[in-house]
Each structure stands twice: as C-alpha cells, then as structure tokens.
Image 1 (cartoon, rainbow, N blue to C red):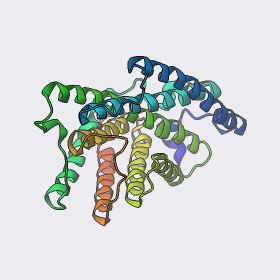
Image 2: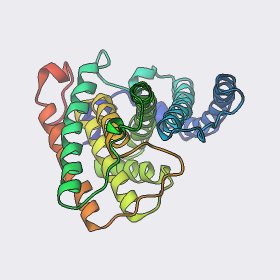
Image 3: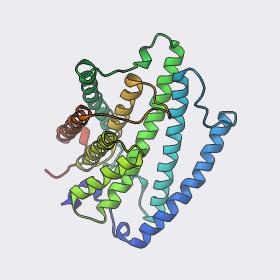
Image 4: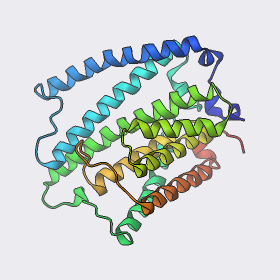
Length: 294
C-alpha cells in the first residue's frame, strides 16, 4: 500500500483538498514570475545586460554560461513551487525533500558514485561496440587548463542546482501530490515518469523513453529510500557524465535521435538503478532511521 512508504507520511488531508490544489495551481506561477524577475535582473547585471550570452567563444565558455543560466532558471522554478506549496499546504519544506531527521548528504554521494559506474558502463559499450562518438571536452588539448577548470566548476554548480530543482519538483512535490490522490503505486510512478519526460520538450521516442525510464527509477528511489537524496545524486551524476564526457551542453544541441540499441541501453541503466536502490536500502549507515516496506 502506497501509504506505507516513509516519504509519503507527511501527506495530510490538506493535500487532498481540491480547493488547496487549485490555490497551488494559481500561487505557484505567480511566485515563480516574481522570482524570475529578480533572477533575470541579477543575471543581467552580471552579464552587462545580455542574460543569454551563450554566443561567446570558445565552446566551453558558452556551455558554462548556458548551464549556469539553466541552473538559475530551474532553481527559481523549483523554489517558487516549493514556497507556494509551503504556504498553501502548511507543511515544512523539508517534508518534500526527505523523511529522515536530517538531509542525508552521504546518500547523495553514494547515489552519484553508483550512477557514475552505471553510466560509465553504458558509455563504454556505446563507444566500443556501437561506435559512439564522444567529444571528451575536459581532455581536449585545444582548451586551456584554466578554461577547463572553470568549465568543470560551472557545470558542477549549474547541473547540481538544475538536477536538484527537477528532483524537488517532480519527485518531491508532484510525487507526493499524486500520491495524495491515488493509492496505486504504479500509477504514481507512471504519472511522474510521463510528466518528467514531457517536461523536457523533446519528443523523439528514444528521448521520451530515456527520460521516462529515468523518471520512473528516480521515483522508485524516492519511495524506497524515504527521500530525494539518492535520486539527486544519481541525477546530477548522469548530467555531469554527459557534460564532461559526451560533450558540452548547449541550447542549440540537436534533439536525441536514437535506435533500438539506445533504448536497450536506457532499459539496462534503469534496471541497474533499481538494483542499486534495493541494495542501498539494506545499508543502515546510509538509510539512517528510515525504513521502507519489504
């Protein structure tokens, strides 16, 4: 039964009232709009009026600026949604982050480490067997070391904020809001995966499948491990592997266009993530006082 998951214990009758859900739908965009003005003004002041200065050269610099802007935008969106939820549903912000007494940073690092291994294996298979092409930007000798270090710092900060924001919105608020309206675990995960995939506005079947599988795995992690920590680490690590190995992230990047092999790779990675979650929940030092149904 879905109510047995520790991460959902914070749900109250207020979360089920349609009047409050409607108030949330009205309040969240207003709060985000107000925050976006502050963020845009701050970015404009720091970029001499050009807040979308992603045309600078070289490519690593453009990517660093873009990732920081992406993090700022998604971070503002997440903060606006959670601030609205805090007042509408009269709940502490932490209740959408973790059921543990304290946020478990060790679980974030553990999720990141396991994900690097899994994504690394998939990328290796892609290169060795499927003839995949990666840019390896941090090893490119045409870039100065100072630029590489600045790029790494920018993507670590920007992608951490962006991935955390997505997890807070999708596996935090949306997951719990959906669970407040249905007792079917599979439906909660399916809705979460579908909305997460569609949110990225990339409608190639492979891209949709990849994002949906990732969303489902992250939702499972939140339910089984009692919080977002593992999913945040896994999400950040996945994006970092793409930025540091596959190539710099840029707004003009072409959409994903894959084949059956790519889908199989995503399925394998999702299964690996579920296995990693099940192994993790048997580790008391990482789980702390949180326990989930057997």
